Amino acid sequence: MNQNQLKQQVGQKAAELVEDQTIVGLGTGSTVRYLVEALGKRVAEEKLNITGVVTSNATADLAQKCGIKLKSVDEVEQIDMTIDGADEISADFQGIKGGGAALLFEKIVATNSKKNVWIVDQSKLKKQLGAFPLPVEVIPYGSQKIFERFQQAGYQPTFRLTADQQKKKTDSGNFIIDLHLQQIENPQALATKLIQQVGVVEHGLFLNLVNTVIVGTPTGPQVITAR
Ligand SMILES: O=C[C@H](O)[C@H](O)[C@H](O)COP(=O)(O)O
Image 1 (cartoon, rainbow, N blue to C red):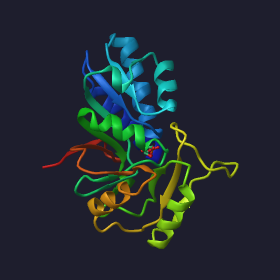
Image 2 (image 1 turned 90 degrees about the vertical axis):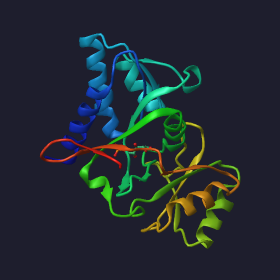
Image 3 (image 1 turned 90 degrees about the horizontal axis):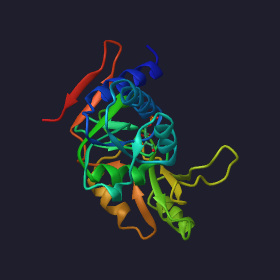
C-alpha cells in the first residue's frame, strides 16, 4: 500500500465515526481530503445531517463541492468532534501541524472542539518531534526581525515560499517561517517561548489536544487512544 492509499484508508475510517446531527470540525490537507469526500458521500447516500466547521479556504471549497453544509466557528456553540491530519505525532500524542499552512485556523477549531481526532499514515508517528520543520505563522510587518531572532536562537529558519518564490501567505494573509530544529527536547517550553514573541500569531506545536489517533497501516486502520 502506498502512502496515499493509507491516507485514504484513515480518511474513510474517520468518516464512519461521525454521528448524525453533529457539528464536525474539518481539518486541512491531503488526508482530510479523503475524509471530506467520504463524508460528502454519507451526506448524499444516508442523508446524514451534519454541519462542518472548516479550517481553511481549501477545505471550505471541497466541503461545499461535496454537499456538506458549513458554519464558521463563531456561529456554533461548540464543535462535537474535529478530525484533522498531522505532520508528526510523538509517542505521547503531541503533534506538529501546519505543513499546509493552515495551523492557525486548525488550532482555533481544535481548541473549540469537545474531541479531536488525528488521521495519519504510519510514517507520521515519531519517537520525538522535530524532524518535520516546525511552522510558525507571523504577521508580515516585522517578520524579518523575527526571522533574525530565530536565526540567532539557532532555529535555522526559512520563510516558506510559493512555487514562484514569493513568501507564502496563509488564509489570514500572514507569512510562515519554518524552523529546522531536527529534535525538540521540550515542546512545551518551546511553545511558550514562541508564542511570547511579538508578531508571532501561532505555531504548529499542538500540545495536549488529542487523545485519539487513527493510523493507516498495510493491515488496516488502527485506532490508538491515549491512556
Ligand atoms: O496545515 C496543514 C495541516 O496541519 C495538515 O493537517 C498537515 O500538514 C497534514 O497534511 P497531510 O494530510 O497532507 O499530510
